[in-house]
Length: 92
Image (cartoon, rainbow, N blue to C red; front, top):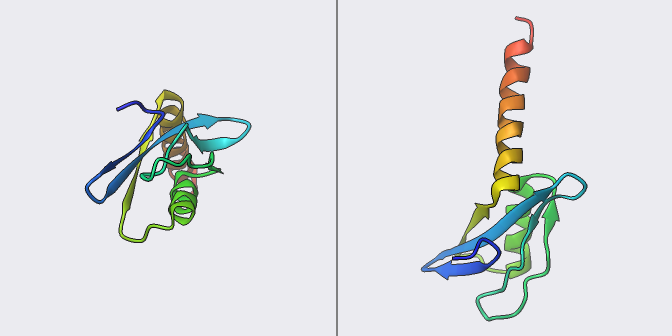
């Protein structure tokens, strides 16, 4: 599977995701199961991106799986490390 595509597996939909510091997370060249092009979806968080994809597809019974490219994985990991550091730096 190309990371830039959207693929359907049973009740799971896999969507390619990348990250740009100026835009945030965004879908990459995805197509709907019907073959129509899914508009590029942009959000500041992965949770918001997933919700926007679900709303654009109008599918209630499908699990959306985000397939992150290197840039998106790096940003997600940086945010996770940043959150852990912030929590450990707070005074008790």
